[in-house]
Image (cartoon, rainbow, N blue to C red; front, side):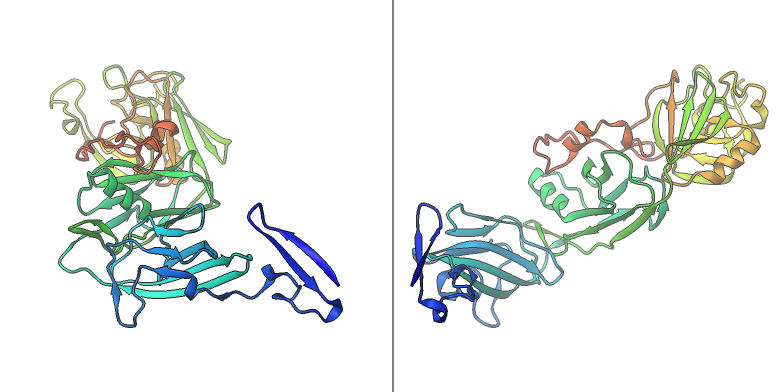
Length: 419
């Protein structure tokens, strides 16, 4: 006869005795820890409905409690039929687990409870229940942007809410339900631009040739006493090559990089004094083969020496207020030598055609060494990348040091043009 001592910490020592090769034990290898899980129904109590046909109140938290002194809870998972997992907290001594995130109304949940007895043998119990679907409540709908397609690596993901969310706790509920995943994976965060709009971006640009997916787990989740989450259409975009055009206003030169390799240098002209081009990183918003640009749209009176009314071709837009990269055949003599435009970046028609056909929405144009002011963060296109990452994450409702820094006004988008 042999005796094996298995230590399970200071609280228990288990002796397993074997009589030769014919000895029996709780598990196939003589170790009770290897035994098949027993039914833990008598070892736990559950706050949800246990009778068939009864439904749980989604506004009440779930709770699983260990019964007696001969066992403890080791793990609990609660998932609804769509795959949404309920967050929870397990007491250090295994005596109690409770949910920490809200349940969805009108959902079917499966709760899997793992336990162990005083000898360390594993127990299992699977519970299922349905929640009532609240009536008469308003829905918060979410619309993701941009539209599905292929974009440059600078394209932020946006989420537009159908109603304003000002309360910090409610923002946490909303933000936790808005998920963005990318392949390859990168670190990213939401930023509350205002009460109805969020932007999501990585710490650096998206990887080239990545897949980015956004979806909402907010449907039927309680946000406030009168508001629950509505359905949202998921979004899937892909990224192309990493295209970055660096515009040096002092050198009158644009250098275009593809996947960090220089592919072209272009002589340019940018904004003259009084109309200096904005410094900073801008995201390509749109491409228009032809635009009729009028000085009156940017506040220049007709008859002024600075007034203009020109047909412009190969126009790549980078701000809503009318800053473009475009063909400027009238200023070819100054390109590469002087800044003579009204804020746009001008180049020869062949170069503008090449640029127009090379870049896509979401690609990046970075202006340096201009005497102009810095690119606006949110109210004139996508200036998101001009905010340092440490400050960006502070605009998240669930960031540890979030202090409301993300609540800023998003002004109405304007549509004038400058040349």
